[in-house]
Image (tube, rainbow, N blue to C red):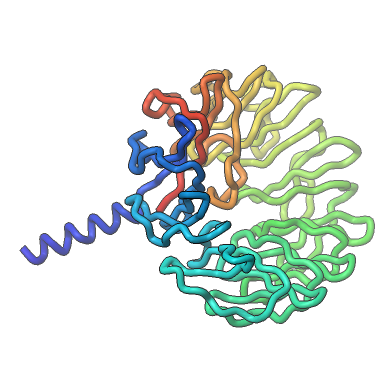
Length: 373
C-alpha cells in the first residue's frame, strides 16, 4: 500500500509539472485551458498573463498577484505591476519601488542598481553608472558592470558591446567571442556566429573568423542544419561554418533550413529546396516560413495555411499566423509551437493540431501559446 501511494504521489507530481496551459479570453474575461481544450481555470480575470515556471500573474480589484496551476492564490494581489517568473524570480512594482520576489513573495536582496531587469537564464542585468553587469539568483554579482550594452541571453549566451564593437559572453560572464566586431549575430550556435570585421562579413567558429566571399548580409544559424543564409549582390544563398558558399546566391529571398528544407523565393514566388540546392516543393506561394519540428510549415497565398514536407496541404490557407511570445516558447518559429499552432480567423483565435483539427472546435477573443508547467 505504501508503494502504491508513493507511485500515485509521483504520478500526480509529474502530471502537475508536465501539463500545458494556455491563456484565453472569452466574454472579456481571462482563463486557462489545457491541451484537451478544457478549462482548468475558468474565465474570471479582467487582466492576466501566461504561466511561467508554474505561476501566472492575474489582476483582481486593479491589483496584481500570482496563482498556481490549480487557480489558487500563490501570492495575494497586492502589487501595482508584475512581470513573468524566470529563474525562480519575478519583478514586481509596489509603492513605486521595483524588487525581485520568489514564489513565496520573499524579496531578493541585490546590489544597488539604477534600473531593474528581468532575470533570464539564471542572471539579471545590473546597471551602475554607464556600465552594465550581471547578478545571479543569489543576488550576488556574477559580472561587475563593465559593458556599455548587453543584449538578451539566448541559450546561455548574449552579445555585448563596448564603444562601437561587439562580442559575446556566457551567463557566467565569461567572454566567448572577443569584443572586436562591428556587427555580430545574437544567437550562439555550434555551427558558428556571424560577424562583421571591417568591410567583411564572415562566420566566427572555433576561434576563427571565416570571411564569406562577397557577402553583404548574413543571418543567424538555425538549429543543427549547419547552414545559414547570406546575401550577395542583392541575392541570397547558403554558407557553412567555414564561410563557404554551399548553395550559390541565386534566390531573391531565403529563410533557414529546418527538417532538411529551406523556403526560398525565386522572383516573387516561394518554394522549398534541400541542402543540395534542389527544388523539392514548387515555387507557388506568396510567402513561406521554416518547418517546425513536427514537419509542418506555414505557406501563404492570400492567407496562411500549413503544408508537410511533401508539399501536401494539411491546414487550408484561411488564417493569420503568429509567433506568440518567443521567450516563452523558446524559439522564433511562426505557426506551430509544440503540438499546436495558434491561428486567427474572422471568428477569433484558435489552436490547430497537426491533423488540421481545431481544438475543442472553439474560437476565443484572445489566445496565447501553450506553456509547459
